Image 1: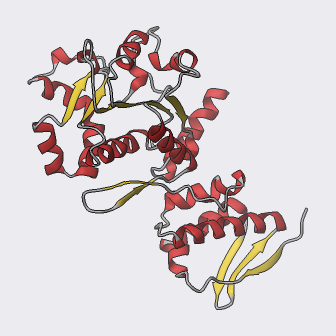
Image 2: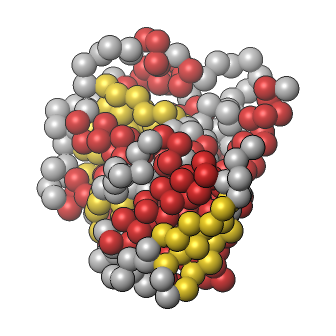
Image 3: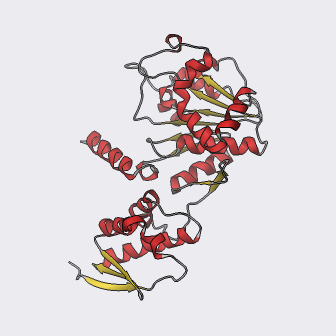
Length: 318
């Protein structure tokens, strides 16, 4: 076993210690816990106590956080968790994963927060159809909406089409009250939330009213051809193989589609196979189609979500 020692990491004078340490020292506490070190700060720098390999790993994580601060990234618990748990292990501590996708109506930049998200956004930009497959909290839907709104604002497309299969809690559209929009709205609420957060409530509703943003259940897509559109199919794990083929063949000229889904949360009736499970084999190597596989490492919600996903995965393996 290596001997415990203390090294001094000289302080970067252009960095506010409070920004690095986080509220109640939460960022540094995460590094201490993950790498089994103790970290203290005084005028000459950071004093890191631990075994050599743990000190080296902690220093890499701290340098990564400092680099992110210099790039203008606010260091919150989620970002600190990602950097300390994954980035040094990947050997990418000197590589930035930040990509600005668009800005909200309040001017706040929407950035990718993991390498998986960055690769996902790159795939959307470079391909006509992109599949984003991964667990909850990885930003699949939110980033797709951000890309759609950015394309709409830049006049790359003339409308946004939001699609979701109506497979929730065993209900069908016919049992819900109201017109078509009222029937579909409960199933599309996550898309609405992302839309209003990025575009704003007033602009979002105005574009829906004039038809620039269309909300449609998957069942109503048959027979259509969608030109100059950015189409998002959310919760695609709840499509049948026939529905998936039908949706993919709706794409017209000047259009782009993003299909998101979590294959661990399929709500289809018993024994019905998900259309999302087949597409990787069927469409492998087809030009213009890309697959992005996000993992628990890309979860950008409360870090407890990542721990929950890890626990379920361990249980399934056992």
